[in-house]
Every structure is written in structure tokens, then in C-alpha cells.
Length: 322
Length: 260
Image (tube, rainbow over the protein chains, first blue to last red):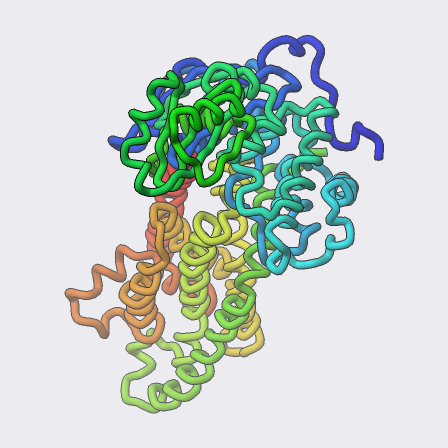
């Protein structure tokens, strides 16, 4: 398939300007402030992520970037345009994959794409052409005439992505694109998103899956309670907010009570959980030896590379947020 | 080649609404015939035989009196139905309006497209009654053309205000109540089955302010009666007022719901 089927080349004049620039964005719903002063920039061609627990304000942010919901205060610029006055022009150039699929379940796979393409004022013939290419792209070519309702979650998700590409968007917004999908479906989706990025589409996604953020995002911000608490590449964030490795040990219940003070001499950040103890260290094997030298008997131990998940939990805490 | 945006929304509505609601739509089309047959011919035989029937019905037989009114009641039923469940469907169940909102289509264009769709829906809905009116010699008249236009206004006079309210709801529970306590009573007390003068004076103002009675009067006078220009303007004025007010209210509430 020719590459131009899916994307249109970025305008060279604006190639260096940020695709999205937000300054001190706030969103208020009655007395509740969902987004509390957020600033960020998305560069052309990158994959930018909003990482945060449920209720952090990610979806509100996405709705504002998608130029559907206006910010209560702050300034936003998308493709250099103001979403308050140029919403339609902005939306014509982007694709949106919402958190919950809002496909028309009563219609066929193809009909969903045809109706959607018409909202972008594409001719019926052009809609049919693009629908065919896109269904092949998301591996649903043989399901074009099936109704949507009986499709699996992964298929519906892929169809929603195909639908968002009907307008050949420069910017694609994905709100929790793989939530609820099985591992196979997630990997197929990631693969398609890589390909879109290769073709020059700018991706903005929200997720609470650390592996997804590490796999896909060039840069990301961690959002918690409506504010950005950290920003950088996945590797940068791990460097800044976690150690290189994490040692996880299990100890007998009788030992747990006093273990925090016993381990304090090691000078490492430790976290005592109900079922295990985490030690953040740059050399996990060495730390395990140190623990044994303190006379602590471990039932089992595991040294692992630290991940974005450790960063995430460090920054947003272990308690439920919503 | 560009197609006006409201027309593209209308296209989408035809596909989505027809697929989900075709059973209800088909049933609502057969309903007027049941009333025409049951009331028109059954009750009609009794009424026409009664003393002074002709004078209290303005010189009309009962079938002549009832059949044109069914244009307006059918339009009301179709308009009210479309403005409740299918609109709630678009906002809440299938959330097709949310999908549309992510495209260049504006909330205003969604409302315009719906107005077009409701017009189509009312014309199709009253089509059967219109054919019956043309087929029966006693009701045959060129007045059927303005009468269908009036029934569209009557349908929109219900659809637009109700849809503007539906856009503020997050549950479908109140729809049954509206149907039971507003639409059905209007159907029975709106001057379709007997002249408004048969009702106690205290109830009549309800018919005067709601669109149905004005639609009934106009449909009747265009097809089987003599319309006085004064009465026509007043009736049209009330219907138009409901349509315009409902449309403006839709612009506000749809915008709020979609862009919240």
C-alpha cells in the first residue's frame, strides 16, 4: 500500500513549530477542578504520552486537545490555531480515538467508516476507497460487511483507530487505546501505531500502562490530581525518579514488623508492602548480600530492572485516587 | 464538491436511526390507521346518527372531522418519539453525537441535521394518513399539500423543544412519564377526536398554548373546511413560535452537552 494512503505530508512551513502548545490550562466542572494549571508542548512527529492514575484528569485534557471541550482558563494552540475560534479547522486535521468505543454497533464495519468520512466532507467514492485501505491496514479487511456488535474488543478498537484515520490526520489522539485488550491485541495495536509514527503522524496518548508508555512514547508527562508532576523521556524519568534496579524480597511475617529500621543502615529507599519489601538500589545483587549480612533471612528474592511503574508509584502514591 | 454539513448529518441519522429504531418507526406508521378505522368508522357511525352532530362538527361527517386531524397527531407522536429515545441514544447509549463532535461538524450543524431528519421522519410518518385522505372522496382536496407542511411544523414544534430537554438528561426514565402525562393526554384532549368546545373551559387553555390543537385546526381547515386567514395566521404563528423556540433551545443545550 502506498504510504500516502494513510497520511498527508506535514506542511514544511510549520514543521518546526509545536503541534500542540498548552499554557496553564485549567478545567472546572462546577466546584471540581479536574485540570489544575497544566502546560506542555507536543512536537511534530513525536509520540507524546499522558501517564496517570484513573481520575487524574487525562481524559479532560484529551477532550480539550481534541478541540471539543473548551478550557476554563489558560491558552491552547493546536497547529498554531486557537481551538476556541477554529475548532472545526483543527478537528479536520486530527483523528480521535476515545476511551470507550463510540462505534455504531447496529451498522456494519464499513458503514461506520463511510458515515464518519462523510462528516469530513469526503465524497462517497473517496470514503469507500479509504475505508478499504484502512480496513486492510487494521487487519479487518475480511470483516467489512459484518455488524460491529459481535466483534471482539480488540477488533472494535482497531476499527475505531481505522475510523480516526479516515481524514488522513496529522495528529492522532488516543485515550487509553489498549485498556481492556488481551496481550496479542495490544501488540497488534502497538505495531500499527509504530507504523503511523513512521509515516509522520504525531501521536498523543493517555495510558496507565507503564509498558505501553515505555514502548511507544518519546516523551511523556506524569499527571496526578490534575497537575503535571514529572516530565521527560521514559529513560530520563526512570533515571531521575527511580534507581537502576529494584530488589524485591519476601520475609517471614514475624520479621516484617521491625524490618524497616533494620534496613535503614543500608541508606536505601525502602518500601514495606503487605507481602514484600522493595529496596531501590543501583546494584540489586550487592544489596541482597548486604541484607543477608544484616542477618535477615529472606524467603525469596528478585532483582529486576526498575521500570516506569516504579516512577509512577513513587510520584502518584499507592493509594487509590478515584 | 462539498455537501452542506447539515445534509451530511442528516445522511448519518438516516442510517443510524433507521437501523436501531425501524421497528418503532414502522409501528408508529400503522397506528393512525388503527385510529382511523376504529374511531372514524366505528364511533363515526354512532356520532353521525346522533341529533345535531353535523352542527357541532361544523357541518362535517365524523370521518371528515377526524381524518385530517390524524395528520397532526401522527406528526406530534413521531416528533416527540424522535426527540426522546433516539436523541438519548446519540448522547448516551451509542454516543454517536460524541463521535460526530470529534469531526469538523459543529454542535449547531448537529442540530440543523436533526431538524432535517425530523422533517423527513414526519413527512414519511404522515404519508400514510395523507394517502388515506386523498383516497377517500369526502376528504380529497389540494389542501393536502399545505396540510402536510403544517404537520411538519407540528412535528418540529414537539421534536425541537423536547430534544432540547433530552440533551440535558442522563437517563431515559423521564421519557415514559412525558409520553404518558403530556403526549397521550394532548392526543386525547387536543381537539382531534371532538371539538375543543366539548371540554370544560378550564382545560381549553392547555390546548391553546400547545402546538397540537393549532396543527389539528389547520390540517382540518385546509382539507375539509373553510379557513379564515385570521385563524390561519394565528395558528401558524403559534406553531412557528414553538419550532423557533425549540430550535434555539437545542442550539444551547446541544452545545453545552457536546462541549462540556
